[in-house]
Amino acid sequence: MRVFNVYQHGEDELLAVKRGFSWPGFFFSAFWAAHHRLWLLAFGVVTVTVVGRKSELQGPWRLMADSGLVLVALLVGVVGNSLRGQQLQKHGWSVVKTVAAHDPDAAVAAVQKERKEDPEAWKQEQRLRQSRELGRQLAQAAMDGDAAVVKDLLAAGADPKWKGSTGATALMAAAQGGHAEVVDLLIAAGSEANAANTAGVTPLILAAQNGHVNVTARLLAAGADVQARDEDGDTALSVAQNSGHVDIVGLLSQGKE
Image 1 (tube, rainbow, N blue to C red):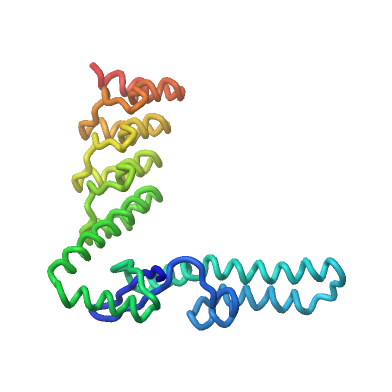
Image 2 (image 1 turned 120 degrees about the horizontal axis):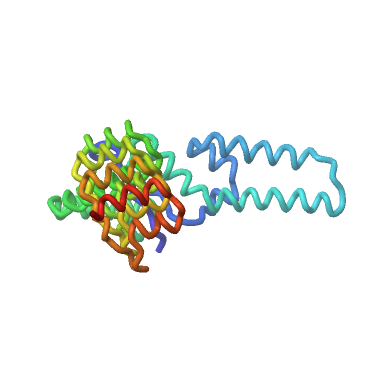
């Protein structure tokens, strides 16, 4: 049994992509990449192969060149399926299920059967999956400081309170990066200024630790708790003092009064 990610496009179109190593990608690297429209990868493999074959190296240098070609094929085998999945997502496909099956057709059939047998449970599962994916994208956009994407994701239904596996939120990502405009958007959308991750770290602690004065001021205005401590017993004030952020120390000292 192998493990497949099953992708969906539109209402009914399904496609299964094996997770992990691709043996066809290893043995037929350039043809496999071209077949799946991974054009840049295919071009790279062909270029390396042509250069390697046409070189006039002899003896141990020839052996090294041939070994390099094998390593390129190995690389395609390792990353090929992952690149294929990323390409599908760029073209509007989304993962709807991860299943164990003998082959891609069996994986697709398993998803079709589940969807047909219990459509309500299927819809609920897809709503949860979509919520997780939107939350992940929101956190990434917040980390990047991309206010336009954050707006679009919030409008598309992304939960501003969503937490990742470590309890991290989009607001924490924006606070850590010092992205004041994104912080404003998330707070206005309902992000919790006092949410803590599994280590007890809050957005205010992150902003103070990284010296972001404007973000610290915004979080304080949103009701962030100056007294909140992480698992090491540190507060936003103590991390600002330890990091030498004098302006932030002043802001937080006023917040304690």
